[in-house]
Length: 631
Image (cartoon, rainbow, N blue to C red; front, side):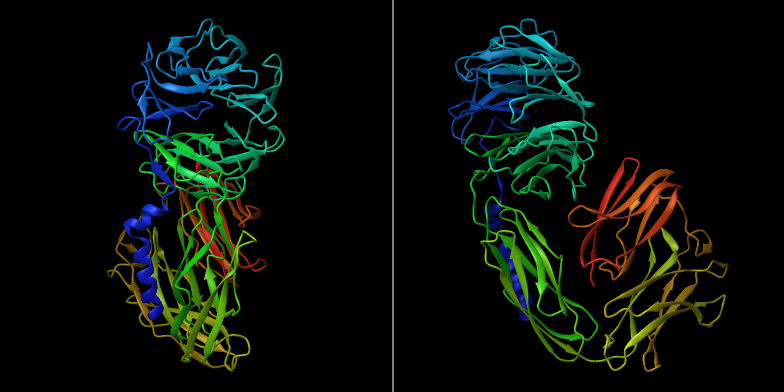
């Protein structure tokens, strides 16, 4: 089809090196050094940015937002610089792990040790409050200096890894169990249980607290830590959480260091998250820092410093770009789906584009997914599906509405031609289920007009089976499947054990019974049971090596779908379905289950079409799958 050729040309253009360079959100700065592991940032009132390293305990500075870096004077007793803070008079204090605290009064040219009465040098993080007091978190307590580090006093004993200043100018710290808050310079403290968080990771410009766990969980509190709301819907990757940074307008940048790490981004206070790694050459993201100019700086483990291509504080009007501009499906057999891929690009530089709801003026055209989240400068794929119901020309439009009310709605013209009426069902897939070789899945469609009001509407399907060999050529009735409309049907059927005689062939056939009491049969289709244990139809192992969650089937589904998972050992299991808002729809499983393969059925008969998420938690294993209900 001509529209697909146009799509291919658009796709090639989008994937060209020049296009990729233009869409990068992050750009690598010219330093510091080569392959440096950067662990800390600070900036003076004039905007000079300082970066402390783990690599060799050096400190670097830039006066042009990373265009060039200069090596500062050496620390007398170097070690990893885990924190730097700038005082109101632009003097600097550097926390050197296990070595002490050093001050510079000349822009980093020289450093003098300033840690008298500091009894613990396992320094983690520092912050300067509104009075110019310096606070340092260590594994044995929270220390404070009122004289630029000349002397220190212990303000609270405990194992502390973070210290923050909240929007009420209170001091915050955590010890993995409690959140400590003081409005009296540490003379008195209020303690709140931190659970379900493990660590505090920042204070949003709106005053809310953000906490995290090591297993990708993100939580938000709007009442000073008294209660926490789960904000990590859709966040399933692994990695250690290192830092958050916030733009002046409240956009959140969430850095992770790990095998599946990198950057997450939210423009709606954590309700939705988007992967934002474009331009990063490593996923080992550690510290984040919002510069006074609005640029976000990223320190990495081994790749130096990256910077946002534009100020995160700048508001750009986003725009929706769509290719191709119209969709023509050509000839499509009635009852069979055809799909055209559409590319939706966000031409904004700072705002995440939320496109939705995506609604067609013709019910025979649909879109997958039902809504899109498109990060700045990137492209997402939208699948437009056409399922003709009659031998006629269909036209319609697809509306793409942006979350920005000032942005015009984009309409995509649609056209398709349905043709041909075939009464018999057609088996389109017959396969053995992985890890359960005693079960076969049969998927079929009926290429006929069997919707309500059609002259010969399908009432039900029946599935038949016979085995070549042990049971001869006798057809055996298996199951009845109610006809619920157009689209694909699928059932799973067990394969009986057959002893001896080699590996048998199983043959399946589907019959449709119509309103006029006519019966039409599909062409038989066969599958061979592979030799596993010498007994056909018996799987080699009934226990998986690891916890697993399979994609639901069928998917898309209407109205029910099957979710399969496996446990290598007995475990407490929860299997919960959520909607796109992160609200719990149904709790399918909440019990201790034995090792082996399990399945649960999710029935969406009472729910609206759209995307749903099933989340499996089994011990420390957490996995989320996306499901599409099409009514």
